[in-house]
Length: 159
Image 1 (cartoon, one colour):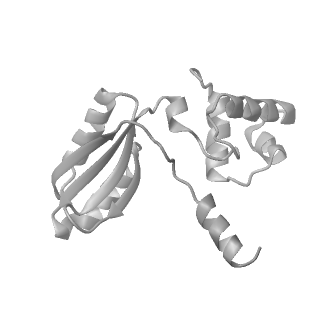
Image 2 (cartoon, one colour; image 1 turned 90 degrees about the vertical axis):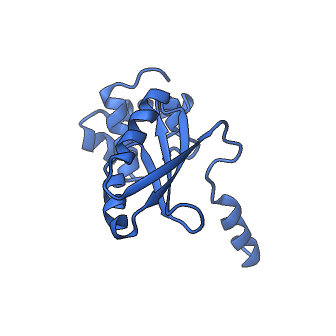
């Protein structure tokens, strides 16, 4: 889907903020007709912007098709400040404190390599960041999932 208009973006934000929102609540909160909300959500699903189930946004479909994994070495006294600063960078999707080489691991998305470079420069300017190592994802073979785990729990419990 090439073009998301302001209404599409408001719908996506509302669904991200409240994944259980019903179409009626969505239309009321955005001040649009129920049929408009329902038609827009269906169109976002057909275009692949919303993943099956309708509550998770496919970032590649909205233009964020560069995915990078960034390992950050941090001055340990500055760890909390580094995490707080990373939270302010919109392209940073996840931050994990890790063991092994490096101290922090991040998943970062970008619209292109120039956008990624700008994000990485932001990271490097954070007080306490010593160095980073970036690896680009070339293809996602298995996206984030939880269904196999929950299915296993259900089988084990006899459900």
